Image (cartoon, rainbow, N blue to C red):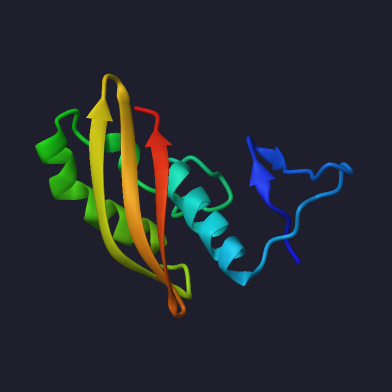
Length: 115
């Protein structure tokens, strides 16, 4: 079983042990990794990642592109269906909201994107 990640390291419980993930947790974690990594930046797999960092700095323009960027990044991830995506700016920070279906359950994830 895989472990939960937090801030680039394994998340730990009160005893200092790695926190295991269930199947849905692993799918969400893998989706978040794919969305947060800049596409082309991982030398072992240049196709891994997303183009979210390239979104224009206006909300209307960004919302026109965000669903396509999310679909492209998560397309290879089996067991995950993208139901929708939107984004909003607060100053220099972009927040992306993604609605997913994992097998039979619906989930919404939120992530901040560094531009």
